[in-house]
View (cartoon, rainbow, N blue to C red):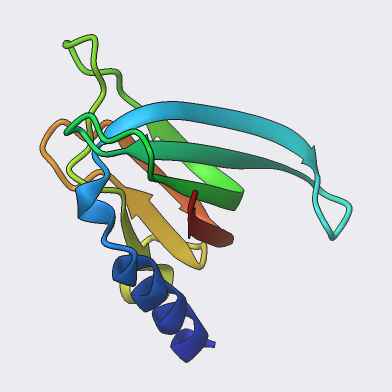
Amino acid sequence: MTQAVDDKISEYYALKPTEYTLLESLTIRQGFGATGIMQQSLSIVLCKDSGDSNTKLSLDFIGVRRLEIKQPELSQITLSHVEILPGYSLPQVESEYLVRDPEQERILRFECGDFEARMR
């Protein structure tokens, strides 16, 4: 299982997420998951800060837990990148993945069971 987690994270970083720093949208949804238990999902769309709005990075996270969002003082939300780490390698992380903004401001942080990343 850990190899599948590592492979998925490697595929995500192959999309070069550090190039997509400007938050276009963040959507939280709640519904019943595949196991019949209520769960939250989170969708994030990022674009390049340079004004290139043609290509966007779309991230969908399933089974979101411990969601923390901290709005920065500035009106424009930018993230150096959305960092995704394997949960098995971190103490006190109970889910498959830890997702966070690695910068000091810590705008975004949560755990999730699965995710999908794609360009659009």
